[in-house]
Length: 67
Ligand code: F3S
Figure 1 (cartoon, rainbow, N blue to C red):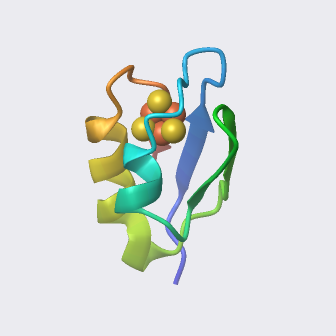
Figure 2: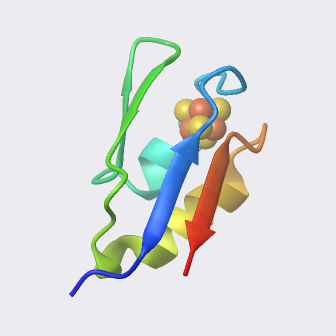
């Protein structure tokens, strides 16, 4: 199933630290230094990893909205 989680990455804050990519590679993908692609629809088996990625980002660029 799919839970309602909304991911927004503030790309003006992202500085390419790539913690998110290491922690949730199925959701975050880094192209170059600052071109971060992400899948805003998160499979429920990825939710914890996305939360860890948000917590690990050194500049708090990853914002999560959960219902
Ligand atoms: Fe950017 Fe933070 Fe990920 S700086 S690459 S959103 S860990």
